[in-house]
Image 1 (tube, rainbow, N blue to C red):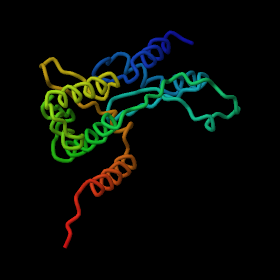
Image 2: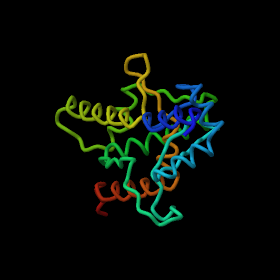
Image 3: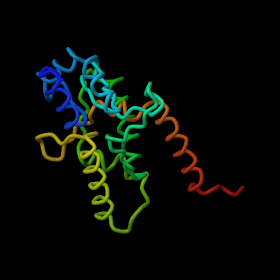
Image 4: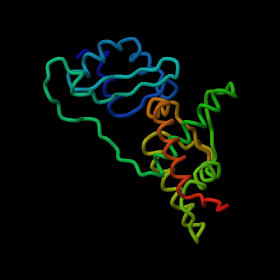
Length: 194
């Protein structure tokens, strides 16, 4: 592997998701050598995804069916099993990002901790202790930061919704989740006896 590929490949593997704004020099290397990087990563059973319009790149595990030689490669990219609440927050954040894109010229969506708590509060079972509910949501926010779907800004209590969430949660996932929520609401909403 040439030196021109070493840095971007290592950065992609370490970062999980690499944004143009976070590492402009590495981003230039990725865009300049995208095909070569993809060929190199394919040997390890990985694919590189580069979204030039949104300015991010990440690696993902190739499906076994995508391999030409039929060889089974051990999984390198870890799958994360997400709780219902974290999955719900991802879908809600994806919706907020779509709304922001449609109504605002700003490419960054910033949300306060209070906004995040209010966004999800109505979907979680009520608790007698409000502080426990907020602590639980804070744990979900931390998990989303660990997954790099949210990034805490320098201003305390303010988070940036990361653009690659669009790749994690596509329109089909949003529709499926909305159907699930609709069914859930129907089962918990009391029926009027007339």
